[in-house]
Length: 302
Image (cartoon, rainbow, N blue to C red; front, side, top):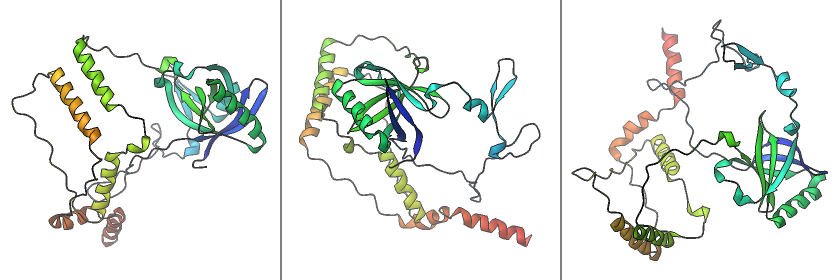
């Protein structure tokens, strides 16, 4: 299993209980950075300090509190949370079965795999096959990390997937936009462009180019190479021009036709390292521990 279990309990389906574990179905592959002092490379640390006595606190000494409108605080302990009368703490309760298309995708939050225990494999398969044949989505409630959530259970590649959802009052109303009435021929041209760009969805065709470029830049700097940045396109002189929608749409349709007829282009190779920047880049890529060692040496000599 690619991730650790985040919840365990059972799915309550009528008089049938299906023991399951909940595993995260997605992962964040963003590039994460630590914070360092730019001058000497020292790592920046955050401390938990009490604003009353100024003492640094350990995790076990920290409680959670809720501030009341009058400014007073109600402190909640672990025992308070464990004693809540919430039936969904250890059970996923099926509220109803609904057509999937009736759930607005804006309500979906996070995705999890529901994996059965060995003892519940048969009941799990029964629920999975019944949901798939009915063409419905199970609307359920579940408590994860001390919060009850609305969720949907559907079938994906022979496994039950639970999608946590926002409550209706957590969806913000749409913002107002300026009113406009496109012309009929403009709508027809836009539909023609959509037709030209319509393909079967293949997620493998899409990659995070920003993340790839960022990792390349980090690797180049670590090896003492200069990162070559392509020049930005120049803005048109004379300020912004009024957009001719029809001309732009027609040109877009023709461009889409050419793009579909042309074979996919070979990926471009990065420019070779700039020899003049090697020394400077290598200097800036100095490991943080070297700076810390220099600090220690300075203290000893003092």
